Image 1 (cartoon, rainbow, N blue to C red):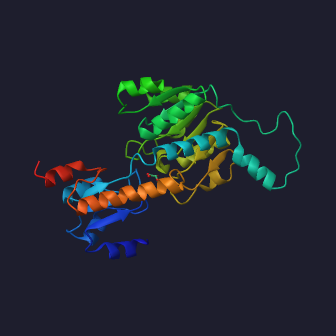
Image 2 (image 1 turned 45 degrees about the vertical axis):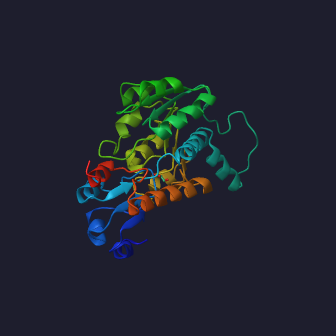
Image 3 (image 1 turned 180 degrees about the vertical axis):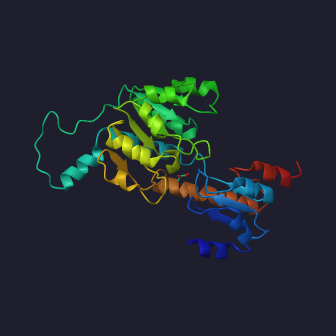
Length: 298
Ligand code: DGY
């Protein structure tokens, strides 16, 4: 919905289901009015919502975790495979009608099996990716400023690195699963790309601004890393023109959770959150539960 229409439509409403493309900020809250009870985001990420502003005004905010974990991990895995084995490039090559004959040096990629996967952000989706990597006999490293309990890493056979640079230097594949915050904006910048192996593949299914796209384009062009698979972009829906010009990057339009089952599950969970709040029940997946506790006098 265009912004002006959204602001007009939300006026006087008690609840709103928002998309990751809707900025929920003071302007939105002013337009809605004081009767607004809940903003139910149709996404697990909620960087589009100014949560402190909602909390200050006593408005509940919810997201859609869990229901998209496996689907998003599948997509990250697909990008990892596609970028390392040059799937999209091969497809474009054939469609262009390029003359070819099988040859030993043709379109060589990087092996995935038995290599080292580095997972940045070891929450639900990062852990789901680690489970997939086990089937490929990979060594799994992870970095997370707020790591999960130790037994989770042990069960997944994943090793925690003390810092991000250590992970970047050792990993053959780096997959990003952090949320977007001021701390993670441009987490992957020119200096960090430089630390990666020149055979490495970067996958991003988190949020575009976690990667400095101009620096990534330079690194891919100059052979500082081998390839990248990107589902999200810094200035979405725009894609950096230099990335589009490169053969060693697979780009897809933010499809992480885009399966029929998962999108239905996300819709159901967003609706469940909305209806619970309006019926005076605790919404199942709140991102600011303190607002609920406050409203219950605890
Ligand atoms: C999310 O949920 O945050 C994804 O980016 C879209 O499903």
